[in-house]
Length: 79
Length: 168
View (cartoon, rainbow over the protein chains, first blue to last red):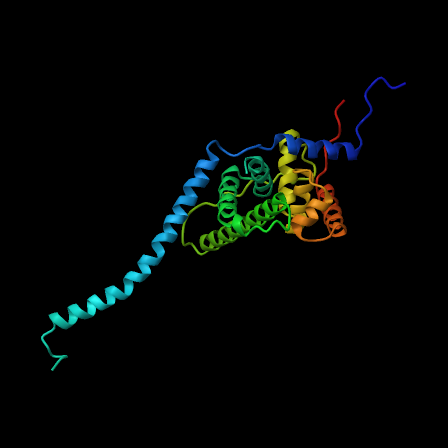
């Protein structure tokens, strides 16, 4: 009778490798993962809320510029 | 969501192999989940939806990273910058006697070279230990298609990975 353990088959080697993969993998993200997710959510929400007023400001800027040009000109356009 | 956090993170890490990138993508996934949970209609299991988001985001992230790398390589060829590009060491020599962690690294390197669908199927099956039915739901395909993906993935990987002889 052989006195040593039988040599694992190629299939067993393969299964062992897959088992090593599962056990060696880092199991979880860094601490405070949800704090970072929450911070990102807040950032994105505030960025979205600022988006509309920024766009709304453009027409008023254009009107203001027009008024300034009219008032500050030497009247050449009006004449 | 707590119970899914680690599963999502591990799945992404298995596909990207970088803990930092995996963390970034996992964050993106959960931000998207919180923003769109109202639109989740329960047609699939929540875990299926999460796995689908996680795997698609991870693959997109890798495509972007690869495109960036190719662009950096191209610009370095044209001499736009003198940055040295460090390639990861290639452990793929067929005679290499790799042990433990190195073998796992070799396995991961070869998984990364598989077609996307095979990568996802193989990772979900062997890292997350999902059933064929669950993988089919994530990939929005059939069980026979998953069997075929896994068969081809295993065949390719086992051809490339030569395990060292057992030392008694």
